[in-house]
Amino acid sequence: MSERLDDTFAALSDPTRRAAIALLCEQPLRSSDLAEALGISRPTMSRHLKVLRQAGLVEEEIAQADARERLYQVRRASFAHLREWLDEVEAFWGEQLAAFKTHAERKDRRR
Image (tube, rainbow, N blue to C red; front, side):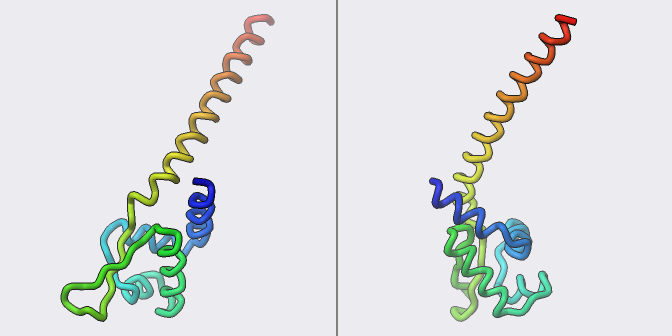
């Protein structure tokens, strides 16, 4: 899981790729539509999509109307390992904060 998580964080470390993911969460889009919406060139968008595909965060599908056209969409299941990790971190800090609160309240009672 660690390697997948590293790949996910590396892919999402770029603000353009995060913006692309946000747009793709709304609907599948062509690379050219993403490039236009994000104000970047098509070759640059293609490089970003390659990183997202390699990390398993997006997938491409051949458009039914034109076999030369590719639609990109988010692979929602690929975010499950990220959610699991976030849940673990949240649980850890929840426990730590609860322990600190208990400790702080005990000290207050002693005064």
